[in-house]
Image (cartoon, rainbow, N blue to C red):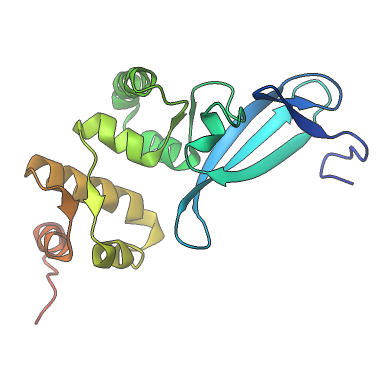
Length: 183
């Protein structure tokens, strides 16, 4: 029996959209950004039938959920991580930024505003991460990790850098906290 008590109803893919066993379209309720077993970006897409209440979720490779092969994402939606970053901004900034990011996503033909797309729309470019810097970011306390990531990517973009390095992390850490790593 599934979490909402529907033992016989199932969802199936019809064409390119997800259809519930009751015959209604499934509606995307959320997208969670994850890393797969090999470190590849994945999405966990949550959908719900608004008629009978059936809820399903699917792990797919990032980007495939809204393509023509999988129709799991039925509209423009913000991933949980991107939504969290937006909600941490002051309300007057949210009102200005949200439509701008959504226009950027639609122009780029994306159905999911991910953390990376959110940052790219704000900065005008995508910033890569050196593997050592990415591992180091995992050691930043969860409560400030998203803010630190955004600030590091913004700083790299402002300087015309294509990636965030450990050296840049140390420099930003020293600037904000006076805590540069001692040799």
